[in-house]
Length: 196
Image 1 (cartoon, rainbow, N blue to C red):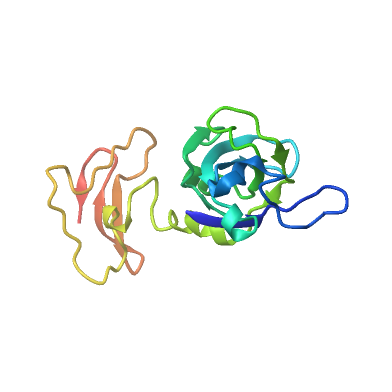
Image 2: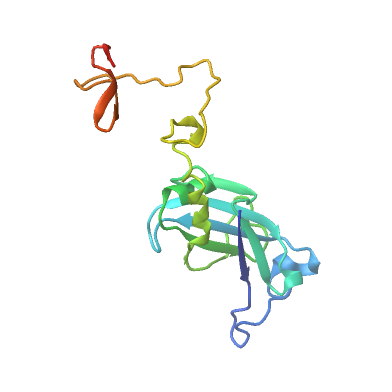
């Protein structure tokens, strides 16, 4: 998850920037905070595709003078857009923008309307460390699933499948060709004949 912190303040004439209170914001009345937030992820600063949406219910802001924390990626609900999961947003997109919506009445979650929306913000480099998590694998397969050149130790295989399985379905090249100093030492040609 990624932590997003913001602050809700008043925006009415003569009170711009002043901390919110229960008289202006119903969702913090009586100290029983029920403020709802929605975060919508996009692939552009305006327009573009909706990558996904998550909602957060009953977020405490009154005790912190309007400051709130949202654990992005761990909302109460997730609705897929063009991406299926929160992680996919960062794995599959080089730029991501988040737009935060706030409901001061505290009754928008799960399917109601949010009264306020803030401008889209670019999600900067730090969250893209999620993307780096996939850099050590290919389609979910880690380094132990591949034959390595000059490994530091012997690679072992205990599965019941072939250790190396290649199905050459076209072309006339050799199936396997190993050389030392540019001279063939082991060849399996296109017909399956072995040359040593």
